[in-house]
Image (cartoon, rainbow, N blue to C red; front, side):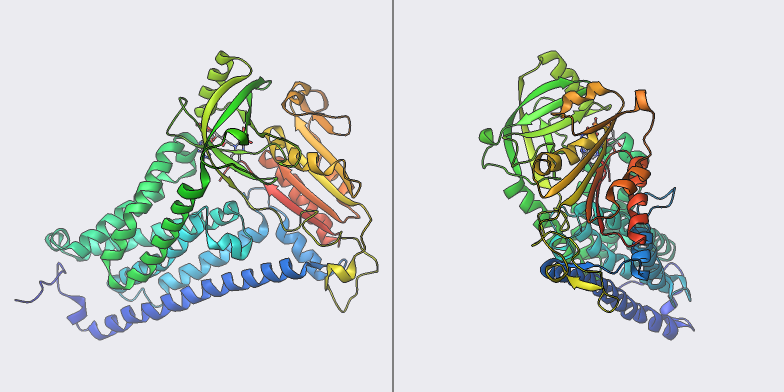
Length: 512
Ligand SMILES: Cc1cc2nc3c(=O)[nH]c(=O)nc-3n(C[C@H](O)[C@H](O)[C@H](O)COP(=O)(O)OP(=O)(O)OC[C@H]3O[C@@H](n4cnc5c(N)ncnc54)[C@H](O)[C@@H]3O)c2cc1C
């Protein structure tokens, strides 16, 4: 007896359009191959660009060129968008390419469409896992931070879930239920499909804001279980499931083997419902820890949400401080419970914590990262817009550094201030927007810092301040804080770049 026919009604492969359907299903493999290769090529181009810029320290130096205008446009942000225009365009192109791969020539018959959805979802699955990993070769190759990759991860996830829903619904309609439940390959597909859809819906912005731990648990368990489910679902899916599995295993192994540490910390209560936590590298077990400016760690306070870990930016420079300091503002969940415990325990209380990290990569344009200081010696030439810094700049002129933060965003900018403000090579401007001056107890404030009290002074015009300081650069701008502040900085820098100024921007946001 042969294998039973899975279809509820007539098998479309044996119907009058059978040959055409088979051809189109098989053509889906070629489409998926082209799609996969296109994605790989884009990553290849980004990688080459990153490494050429990094190794040869290249900078665009032609003033007011069309390229400057384009760069300025790409860095700017439209009023409603969460990301800059460059990233919006990247997301749009990726979405358009995915839609083309999903639907091109596939709307001939629902079964053709279902197969196409499946194969494109599976190609995306590999990408999804690589993009979602904290430790991934992509960070090294492209220089994109985990946070940048996470934006792509989210859109890739949404497209994969959409394709999975269409794939699942069509097969549930076309396949007999008794066939589905009695065959392991279809049941593997049902499990993977169900998990993908569950992960998709539990990843909504609302869910992340209200029940982060549930979102995280579903994400972790779902993404782990769905790898073997995809692998056993269909032979074509296997190589992609293996890539996803390798990305997942590598990420988790590095985290477990290298990232986790048990450490002691002390707490100090500060204005604005805030706890300042100081972690001592000397108490770190099983290995010491170190960090770089601008990085963040995940912390679990034992006895206060032992199964939760939360990200906080490291508010001290490793070169200027013996402790790793965190500024933790009380929100509603863990941070509020920890604040209450710390208030009860009093200043100087000691807690045991588990940290993992640090995460986040240093900006390659950060001052001190280049071989020489970026200063013009001669007017940029029309013929050669892209010149190595070594030929185009002279040392010993001050590099401007503009550090802008709002509220707890100072955790990001303060370590740069600690390191740069006494260095004669740098002209540092530090703007910190806070509701009230009492917040100054969070860090060591000096009179060179511009602390802007919104209760007294209203809101600053951050865009204008950015333009007035960072203009006539070279200038490196770093900013962290609420979204409107970041948008103002981005748009200020975008205008300067459009006008041919030599400005680099590094942004950090407290959320993903
Ligand atoms: C890279 C990064 C750096 C950060 N640095 C700082 C900092 O220096 N100081 C500071 O006060 N805050 C910082 N935050 C924000 C901080 O992580 C959250 O405020 C904290 O996790 C809230 O915990 P909660 O249980 O009290 O949250 P809730 O009150 O339950 O939720 C508040 C918000 O925090 C988000 N959130 C909750 N848990 C997590 C989690 N485990 N991971 C990510 N987001 C979560 C929720 O989605 C929600 O939007 C940072 C966030 C990120 C992503």
